[in-house]
Image (cartoon, rainbow, N blue to C red; front, side):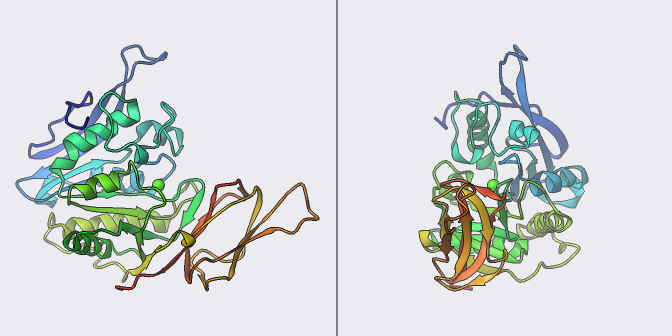
Length: 337
Ligand code: CA
């Protein structure tokens, strides 16, 4: 239960003024280390009373803008730069980030499917439980930086969910716009169980995620957007009074995925041929991609058509696909933009 004391311990004071680098120590007895632990790096920068922002990266271990931008921020940010508190965890699922894999190699779990976590779960669930029980109550807003990982490539976007509470929705949209990404996705998840997103949203707080690229790598542009977006959020949430040094980001084009038809899922296996560029516009019924069965060249490829009008915001990244793979996502303009 989330109410039970965590088995994870922070090596630093999370509540005192100043700047501290430390670890969240997660007990992990293994063949390699009998009384060992997984140590998740954490940095706290605090200057007096004020808003508290929790910044996380490496929720999935093959997404790199978050870890890069947040390690740089953890080194650079000083208490005198802010009013309030910033908690920075660049590699939330540390074992996954160390392995360069989406899931943790320790227990095979997806960090963003185990929230609110479990005190007596494995390493991944114990980290999530600590975040839920000890960190989320401190935070006024949470920003979890993602990208597409090795298997997906996305347009650079910030992501929020459609929320029932109009005030929380407005605050979330304001944060999304403040980040300044070219695109903002108001997402309806295929499966939202166990996400940090819904855990934070359920507490009535602002939660912002990103999808800043993908393919298991980062680019100069995607890292620059992560850094500038986070800097703008420090101003937006009132931790910094000065405007971010590079000013506002671009105006964000709001998109959404109102129906499951927006997601194209593979029925077969073979070589993926995309017929639309990432960011390309399609009409409902337009060809988006086809799958060539490698061992049956005489057979026509399986054609996949757009289920909605919109932009292709996400594509499968590797050339080979399997049944059940997400091939592409078509997002439509959000009606409130
Ligand atoms: Ca992700």
